[in-house]
Image 1 (cartoon, rainbow, N blue to C red):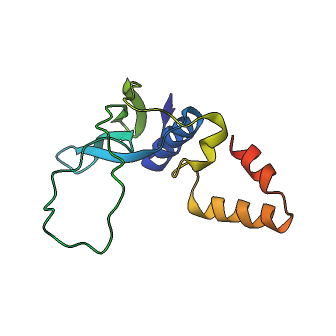
Image 2: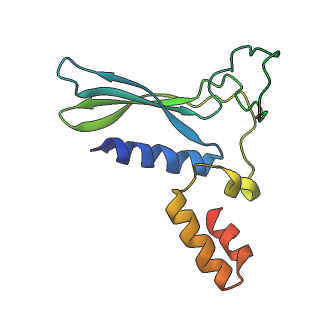
Length: 135
């Protein structure tokens, strides 16, 4: 499948990820000598592992470690402004969201679209309908 911009490539990957039950983030970008994008990778949000931290350091907030070292990714190659999928690794090393939990996938929608949907449906007292829309 071909797209024509970074945003369109991200939206395509994000839609796929939501359907499958995971979230994505932008990863490596490769540029040519004139600073044009040649390749872009979108990876599972659980890619990577946090480095060992200094446990003597006092922190205000301890965050849940959500990285599992997942290798799932989609790579786009750009040629003359056309973004083409050149590599896909769909192997995850963690559970994917169940269909009834897909609304919990963080990057499934843009924040603006999410808030608009929540406000519209909440005003109509249709919270269950909102969840059905996301699944």
